[in-house]
Length: 114
Length: 107
Image 1 (spheres, each protein chain N blue to C red):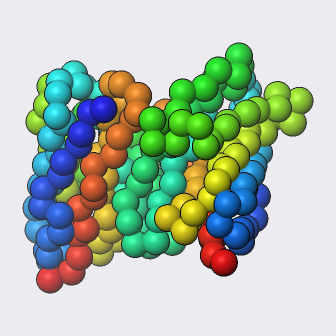
Image 2 (cartoon, rainbow over the protein chains, first blue to last red):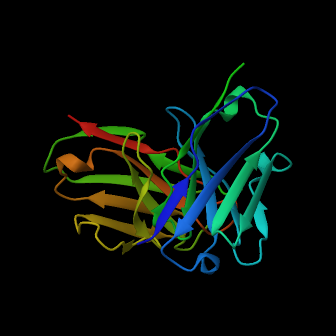
């Protein structure tokens, strides 16, 4: 069965970076793009970007351009999302989601606090 | 970027009610519209894709319609497990923006 398993919760200081992983199993990894979506506490869903797991090309939301990097490792069927220059407003649950949105990771809470 | 709006932002309903949520895009998105259901502390669940295509395993009381800029999600015969927040999302152009959500709670 398809599973997306994300790395555990993180606490970071303002200005630091965080790297969240999402390990896929149960399907051919490179056949499906992967999205990253985040949700701040009590807020709605925010689309961050997408990675082509086959070729590695990425498209990011303008809001995150220059701060986000999405990569993949086809040998381990894992995608990564790194967000830099963290600020308190980046406190959120970060989700990976396989295109076309049927399968989601369990979410990773990233807390940014001094 | 394509902006998505939803109405209402929240509603109160009773079990057995028929509920309709609307979603509007700031420009035509053809039928590139998803509907998600989210319960507290859980990842979103895809209910409907391509505006009206019900996902496998989703009860038939959920239905979607619309194309272009105006869309709707209808839940007929609302059940207790349907109390949740619902989001639309356009997948016509990146960024694949979500609507702000509609919270459905118990009257």
